[in-house]
Length: 386
Ligand code: GLT
Ligand code: MN
Ligand code: MN
Image 1 (cartoon, rainbow, N blue to C red):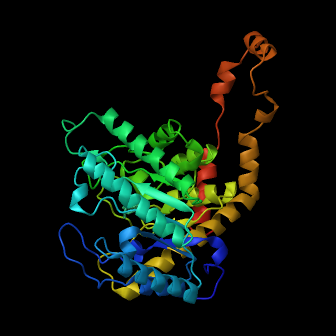
Image 2 (tube, rainbow, N blue to C red):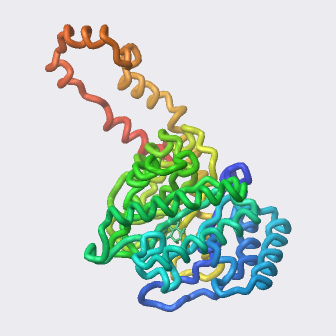
Image 3 (cartoon, helix red, strand yellow):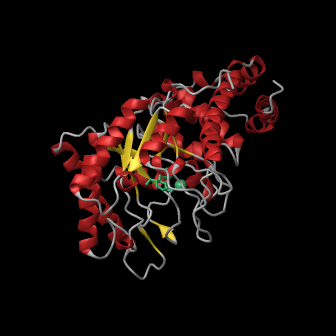
């Protein structure tokens, strides 16, 4: 397909090794696709037009690899990156697959598990830094509970803080250039996961020893799972200067962890998200943390990856169309009418002025806002008739 929706490096589209490498295992069924070697995943991603590839330590290096095995894998992977012109913008650590983490990693009750989690994360940081990664994602998939009888949740918060503070110091001492991006999820694989929302993490970050080094990695599906508005979460992170990374995918509200292709479930919310990212000029990676349906073979995996990027670019084009639409412009200026003339900061004069003012409450209440028309125009742009 040759059209304007071809991915290019400047779009900064990235995929995790675990996304295109997902073999289609689910709780009820065995894998349906053969394991994709990391070097083959790099080749596939280059072929479909992605810019970057991310990994967990164990997506690349098996958990039981010896040092020479690790070094051999690293060398081959670096070669694949340079052969295919791909970069590693982000690295992360797997603190959820191994049975050792059944009770969590940084928040586990066993101090040896917590220590092992720190050791493993430092190793993952070393690995990522060696590949040039500058963003380090922490997704605490096992940091949670099935029963709150097991520990006080505030103790978990303290343990999590200790761990992140420790890793920030390691980052500084090693002269790595990481910025940490904390990723929230409400549940799955645990019954409940601590730090269920991006907003919870934003609150937590302010309590850290080095808050500047830590931001968030909101994921579309993780907000949609609990019926939240992902664009609002992303906007709050952006406004706080904390949008260090983003996981794009999709998910129907209230279902299991679907990790669908970006825009597959709710193209409308995907549109508002893309519009937001483009309007504010988000310059970080656009990472697709999703996987192909279990029905797919390798060709289907490529279709999935192409689809994520293509949908993003189509929605970006729709956003530009929306921004340039004269009728939408007219409605927006009508809606926003006069607001700019109000002073916004606190002053004694403003207090006095506000107290002395007479408001025509009935007139304020009579105003229609034309949001129906605005929304219909949005729909028509999305449906391709405008
Ligand atoms: C896992 C999870 C994702 C996280 C990844 C990073 S791993 O697939 O479902 O949301 O971003 O640890
Ligand atoms: Mn994710
Ligand atoms: Mn997910």
